[in-house]
Image (cartoon, rainbow, N blue to C red):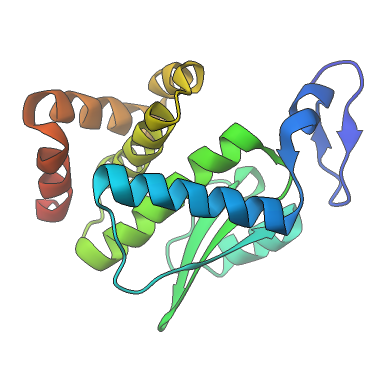
Length: 187
Protein backbone atom coordinates (compact mmCIF):
# COMPACT_ATOMS: atom_id res chain seq x y z
CA UNK A 1 0.00 0.00 0.00
CA UNK A 2 2.92 2.38 0.52
CA UNK A 3 3.60 4.89 3.26
CA UNK A 4 0.85 7.41 2.65
CA UNK A 5 -2.39 5.74 1.58
CA UNK A 6 -5.35 7.92 0.60
CA UNK A 7 -8.71 7.13 2.21
CA UNK A 8 -11.56 7.33 -0.30
CA UNK A 9 -15.14 8.35 0.60
CA UNK A 10 -16.22 4.67 0.56
CA UNK A 11 -13.47 3.89 3.14
CA UNK A 12 -11.16 2.10 0.69
CA UNK A 13 -7.47 2.87 0.95
CA UNK A 14 -5.52 3.57 -2.22
CA UNK A 15 -1.77 4.01 -2.43
CA UNK A 16 -0.45 7.44 -3.35
CA UNK A 17 1.07 6.11 -6.59
CA UNK A 18 -2.25 4.61 -7.77
CA UNK A 19 -4.05 7.77 -6.68
CA UNK A 20 -1.97 9.80 -9.18
CA UNK A 21 -3.75 8.14 -12.14
CA UNK A 22 -6.99 7.11 -10.42
CA UNK A 23 -10.20 8.02 -12.21
CA UNK A 24 -12.89 9.57 -10.04
CA UNK A 25 -14.49 11.91 -12.54
CA UNK A 26 -17.42 10.56 -14.60
CA UNK A 27 -16.50 12.63 -17.66
CA UNK A 28 -12.92 11.34 -17.62
CA UNK A 29 -14.22 7.79 -17.12
CA UNK A 30 -16.69 8.20 -19.98
CA UNK A 31 -13.91 9.42 -22.30
CA UNK A 32 -11.80 6.37 -21.40
CA UNK A 33 -14.83 4.12 -21.91
CA UNK A 34 -15.35 5.54 -25.41
CA UNK A 35 -11.66 5.14 -26.23
CA UNK A 36 -11.61 1.51 -25.07
CA UNK A 37 -14.79 0.63 -26.96
CA UNK A 38 -13.31 2.16 -30.09
CA UNK A 39 -10.26 -0.10 -29.77
CA UNK A 40 -12.31 -3.21 -28.95
CA UNK A 41 -14.69 -2.74 -31.87
CA UNK A 42 -12.00 -1.70 -34.35
CA UNK A 43 -9.34 -4.29 -33.38
CA UNK A 44 -11.54 -7.27 -32.52
CA UNK A 45 -14.88 -6.51 -34.18
CA UNK A 46 -16.82 -6.90 -30.92
CA UNK A 47 -19.82 -4.76 -31.80
CA UNK A 48 -22.97 -4.90 -29.70
CA UNK A 49 -26.44 -4.96 -31.21
CA UNK A 50 -27.82 -3.40 -28.04
CA UNK A 51 -25.37 -0.91 -26.57
CA UNK A 52 -24.49 -0.60 -22.94
CA UNK A 53 -24.42 2.39 -20.66
CA UNK A 54 -21.42 3.00 -18.43
CA UNK A 55 -20.99 4.46 -14.98
CA UNK A 56 -18.60 4.58 -12.06
CA UNK A 57 -19.74 3.20 -8.71
CA UNK A 58 -18.33 3.21 -5.20
CA UNK A 59 -17.46 -0.02 -3.39
CA UNK A 60 -20.75 -0.24 -1.48
CA UNK A 61 -22.79 0.15 -4.66
CA UNK A 62 -20.68 -2.50 -6.41
CA UNK A 63 -21.30 -4.94 -3.53
CA UNK A 64 -25.05 -4.33 -3.73
CA UNK A 65 -24.98 -4.90 -7.49
CA UNK A 66 -23.04 -8.14 -7.05
CA UNK A 67 -25.48 -9.40 -4.44
CA UNK A 68 -28.43 -8.90 -6.78
CA UNK A 69 -26.66 -10.07 -9.94
CA UNK A 70 -28.04 -13.03 -11.91
CA UNK A 71 -24.47 -14.37 -12.15
CA UNK A 72 -22.81 -13.22 -8.93
CA UNK A 73 -19.06 -12.88 -9.17
CA UNK A 74 -16.69 -14.32 -6.58
CA UNK A 75 -15.88 -12.13 -3.60
CA UNK A 76 -18.05 -8.98 -3.88
CA UNK A 77 -15.58 -7.01 -1.73
CA UNK A 78 -12.94 -7.43 -4.47
CA UNK A 79 -15.23 -6.52 -7.37
CA UNK A 80 -13.90 -3.78 -9.68
CA UNK A 81 -16.22 -4.16 -12.66
CA UNK A 82 -19.59 -5.68 -13.48
CA UNK A 83 -21.84 -5.98 -16.51
CA UNK A 84 -25.54 -6.01 -15.57
CA UNK A 85 -28.39 -6.88 -17.90
CA UNK A 86 -31.96 -6.32 -16.79
CA UNK A 87 -34.43 -6.73 -19.63
CA UNK A 88 -33.29 -4.43 -22.40
CA UNK A 89 -31.19 -2.27 -20.07
CA UNK A 90 -27.47 -3.01 -20.08
CA UNK A 91 -25.02 -1.20 -17.85
CA UNK A 92 -21.30 -1.61 -17.25
CA UNK A 93 -20.08 -0.54 -13.85
CA UNK A 94 -16.50 0.15 -12.87
CA UNK A 95 -15.20 0.92 -9.42
CA UNK A 96 -14.48 4.60 -8.92
CA UNK A 97 -10.86 5.37 -8.11
CA UNK A 98 -9.25 2.68 -10.23
CA UNK A 99 -5.90 3.62 -11.74
CA UNK A 100 -6.40 4.57 -15.38
CA UNK A 101 -4.77 1.41 -16.79
CA UNK A 102 -6.93 -0.82 -14.56
CA UNK A 103 -10.06 1.07 -15.61
CA UNK A 104 -9.15 0.48 -19.28
CA UNK A 105 -8.62 -3.22 -18.57
CA UNK A 106 -11.90 -3.44 -16.64
CA UNK A 107 -13.98 -1.71 -19.33
CA UNK A 108 -12.61 -4.02 -22.04
CA UNK A 109 -13.27 -7.07 -19.84
CA UNK A 110 -16.87 -6.04 -19.12
CA UNK A 111 -17.50 -5.18 -22.80
CA UNK A 112 -16.45 -8.75 -23.61
CA UNK A 113 -19.07 -10.05 -21.18
CA UNK A 114 -21.68 -7.88 -22.90
CA UNK A 115 -20.61 -9.30 -26.26
CA UNK A 116 -20.79 -12.83 -24.84
CA UNK A 117 -24.33 -12.13 -23.63
CA UNK A 118 -25.40 -11.30 -27.18
CA UNK A 119 -23.32 -13.86 -29.08
CA UNK A 120 -22.80 -16.79 -26.68
CA UNK A 121 -25.86 -16.74 -24.40
CA UNK A 122 -25.44 -20.38 -23.32
CA UNK A 123 -21.77 -20.01 -22.38
CA UNK A 124 -21.31 -21.10 -18.77
CA UNK A 125 -17.72 -22.35 -18.44
CA UNK A 126 -15.85 -19.81 -16.24
CA UNK A 127 -12.56 -20.71 -17.89
CA UNK A 128 -13.99 -19.60 -21.23
CA UNK A 129 -16.15 -16.68 -20.04
CA UNK A 130 -13.48 -15.09 -17.87
CA UNK A 131 -10.57 -16.20 -20.07
CA UNK A 132 -12.17 -14.64 -23.12
CA UNK A 133 -12.98 -11.43 -21.24
CA UNK A 134 -9.38 -11.23 -20.00
CA UNK A 135 -8.16 -11.90 -23.56
CA UNK A 136 -10.22 -8.96 -24.83
CA UNK A 137 -8.69 -6.77 -22.12
CA UNK A 138 -5.23 -8.14 -22.99
CA UNK A 139 -5.71 -7.36 -26.70
CA UNK A 140 -6.98 -3.87 -25.84
CA UNK A 141 -3.93 -3.20 -23.70
CA UNK A 142 -1.73 -4.56 -26.50
CA UNK A 143 -3.27 -2.05 -28.93
CA UNK A 144 -2.54 0.69 -26.40
CA UNK A 145 1.06 -0.44 -25.81
CA UNK A 146 0.60 -1.46 -22.16
CA UNK A 147 3.02 -4.40 -22.23
CA UNK A 148 3.84 -4.36 -18.51
CA UNK A 149 0.18 -4.83 -17.55
CA UNK A 150 -0.22 -7.50 -20.24
CA UNK A 151 2.64 -9.48 -18.71
CA UNK A 152 1.07 -9.19 -15.25
CA UNK A 153 -2.22 -10.53 -16.61
CA UNK A 154 -0.59 -13.71 -17.92
CA UNK A 155 0.69 -14.50 -14.42
CA UNK A 156 -2.75 -14.50 -12.78
CA UNK A 157 -4.12 -17.66 -11.17
CA UNK A 158 -7.59 -19.17 -11.43
CA UNK A 159 -10.00 -18.91 -14.34
CA UNK A 160 -8.82 -15.40 -15.26
CA UNK A 161 -5.17 -16.30 -15.76
CA UNK A 162 -5.64 -19.89 -16.87
CA UNK A 163 -8.40 -18.87 -19.28
CA UNK A 164 -6.33 -15.99 -20.65
CA UNK A 165 -3.38 -18.30 -21.32
CA UNK A 166 -5.76 -20.71 -23.08
CA UNK A 167 -7.10 -17.90 -25.30
CA UNK A 168 -3.58 -16.63 -26.11
CA UNK A 169 -2.58 -20.15 -27.19
CA UNK A 170 -5.76 -20.50 -29.21
CA UNK A 171 -5.10 -17.15 -30.91
CA UNK A 172 -1.56 -18.27 -31.74
CA UNK A 173 -3.03 -21.36 -33.47
CA UNK A 174 -6.19 -19.96 -35.06
CA UNK A 175 -5.93 -16.15 -35.02
CA UNK A 176 -8.48 -13.71 -33.66
CA UNK A 177 -11.35 -15.19 -35.75
CA UNK A 178 -10.62 -18.59 -34.25
CA UNK A 179 -10.89 -17.25 -30.69
CA UNK A 180 -14.22 -15.57 -31.46
CA UNK A 181 -15.56 -18.72 -33.13
CA UNK A 182 -14.41 -20.86 -30.19
CA UNK A 183 -16.22 -18.61 -27.75
CA UNK A 184 -19.39 -18.74 -29.83
CA UNK A 185 -19.28 -22.56 -30.09
CA UNK A 186 -18.60 -23.18 -26.39
CA UNK A 187 -21.35 -23.85 -23.89
